[in-house]
Structure formats: structure tokens, C-alpha cells
Length: 112
Length: 116
Image 1 (cartoon, each protein chain N blue to C red):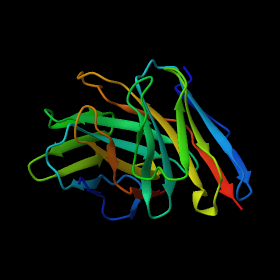
Image 2 (image 1 turned 90 degrees about the horizontal axis):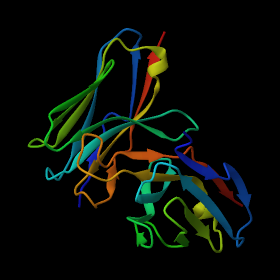
Image 3 (image 1 turned 180 degrees about the vertical axis):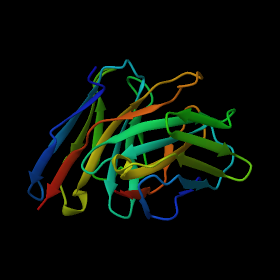
């Protein structure tokens, strides 16, 4: 059974810092991995999706990498801003028709 | 572009009452999902529908029923609500295909349900 872990559960950093959020998964035979952002009281917004054949994806100040062999993905946020404060979740899909397995998320606070 | 729309956003139920959460997507997605999110438990899949006319149980289906009414709509019904079903419920839908955005999943804004 696929398990997805995100540690730490919470993180507080000063504005301007570059930071890395980690996601690990137990079964390396994944189909894709997706990073989401969730603001308080809101739904999840997809940030980046990495297919199993890819090593990384970039969108603006965000870069997500995937290392299937080690069962890890990282979300890099450059020059963090207070507006980046949210919970970040990763989710893994093990097959085209399989379900997503979510991590519990990392709650990020960026201090002005 | 509305994306995934859920109703109602907030609901308070008494134990034993029934209700239906409605979900509709306008992105022509084949697959739709219902999740619940609880503190410390993360997101858990209740039911999903891989395509119109099919539904399957997820991790926590007990106490719930679903209907895939057509390609756009996927409803979740609580037949006899219990306090343990107090949660935030999210509907989602996903693309298919193997392109760069293949199998991306999109979520609704959530429905906050309290059972007293």
C-alpha cells in the first residue's frame, strides 16, 4: 500500500528565504506526483504535476523535482513571500486508473 | 470557467437526518471523486467514479452513497448522519490521457458539514 509522508508538519520562515518542502513515498512505481496548495477554508489548488518520466517541473518561483528511485519529491520555493503562507500537500498516483494517495501536508508560514 | 462546483458550502444536520452534497464539473472530465478532510487524518477518499455509469468505494465509504448522475454531476448522500461524519467534504475531477497535464486533479471549494 502506498504511503506518502510530509515532514515537518509545519514550517515558519522569514520573508525572502528560499525553502524546500519534502515529500516521500513508499512505492517507487508511481504514475505521477502532484503538488497542491490549500489556503485556510478553501479547496486544493494544483501547483505542479510531474509525470513518472519527468525529473522536474517549474512554474514561476516554484520548482518540483522527482526522484522515483529514492521515493522522494521536493517543492522548492524561491524568494518566499507572506502570500506563500498556506498548506502544501503532495499526492501520488500509482497507475493511470488508480486513486491518489495524499500526504497530510506541510503548513507554511512566511513571516514579513 | 467554474471548474468544480459544490453545494451547499455549509450545513448543520441533526443525528439521523439525511442530506445530499451536490457536485458538478464543467471540464468534461471522466473521473470524479469525493474526499473528506479531517484534522490529523489528511484527505481520505470516500467514493470515486472513473467514468459515467461507474462508481467504486474508496477508503472510507461506510455511511455514504453516491450517484454519478451524468458526466458532469456526482452526488454524495448521507442516509443517516452521525457525529463522526462531521468533516469538510471535497469533490474533485480529473483529466485523463498521458500528456503533460494528464491526470491532473481539480478540487471544489469544499462543503463544511457539522452533525450534532
